[in-house]
Image (cartoon, rainbow, N blue to C red; front, side):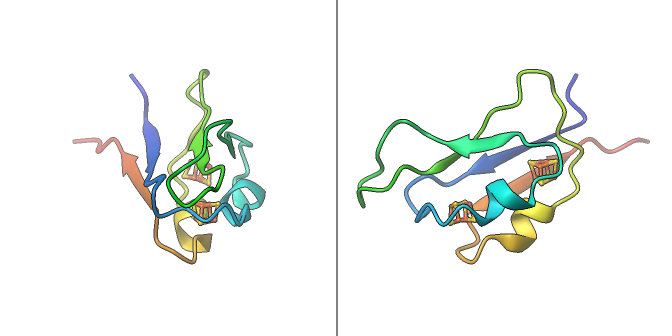
Length: 74
Ligand code: SF4
Ligand code: SF4
């Protein structure tokens, strides 16, 4: 089970790349596809489940496109 993962609203993303630079795990990249504004939006690429849920990507995004999900230990 993944401990954490992110979702990116690709239609709101303007491909500034700040989240890609901010991610310590290097698990965000630009999509090869276009969104409706003509940008290549950022997308998570985390096949090894390395996302820690640190939230740096969320904090950096000027357009609040990113949602971070973390497993809660009970
Ligand atoms: S929450 Fe942290 S580790 Fe996960 S994608 Fe964002 S910056 Fe990377
Ligand atoms: S920081 Fe936000 S707007 Fe910039 S590339 Fe990442 S998701 Fe897109």
